[in-house]
Image 1 (cartoon, helix red, strand yellow):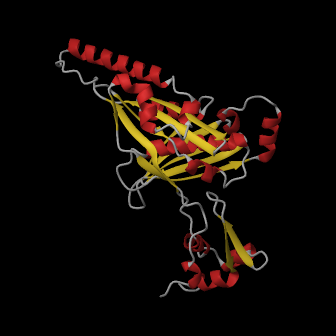
Image 2 (spheres, one colour):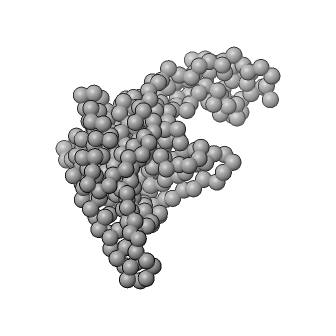
Image 3 (cartoon, one colour):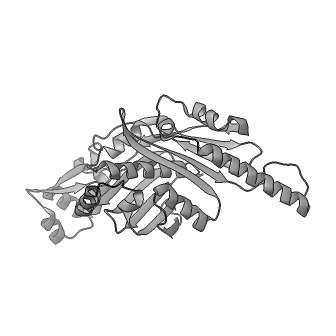
Length: 325
């Protein structure tokens, strides 16, 4: 059967933006340290401006985008890495994900009354103030034919970076340090992340396997990790968000004395995956009575929560689709 004409329309008019060096992986040779520098650039601005959020909520969204962009870069298969946060604060739900190809998207649901009360206090607003108590989940989705891997932890800490580090400490059980930032600059919204991981291996020494040598290797690895953390703490928000400062140059500033090895960078892009065809498939599963109740002014309107784009269907279009089975 031919595809109905209304399903052949192009996807919504959303930004076609690609940032070539959005994620830059690196490691420190002969040291148990690897990391990723994440700078979504104009992509963050394009995604965040699709939503009418207060600056504090947009900043939280920018940090979430940078986090999932960095974590997804470890995917070795086609799929996506997603962050979901549910809490009892003004931002009751936050979703952000990134595919293996670097396509980013974001959504936050806010309680305007709670948010207004929080902002009216005049105090600095933390990520925890926005989220409240609840849980954080990180999910690796390898596609419909594969099982999803998901880890869930209770929200702990004042910042999203604290929450992510708590997740890795309790769920993945390995050392991870994260810096996240997002701000509205003269060029628009910018976000960034620096993620460090301590990996297995004793820092590349050639010591033998005796208990004494293993202790030396472990101590050297701990020293190397502590040194990397001390250097990472010197990074400023301004440096991380500076479009004019190349990623390689920034990493060199931080780690040039630690045998820095910079890997191949990967792209990040505006990546909402909505389409009229996908939403029409959802509508086709409703009963005729339900569809009739959805009609307003002769149309059924559905909004993609990620890109905030409205899709309109006439009742006859949906009827023709549901009656085609």
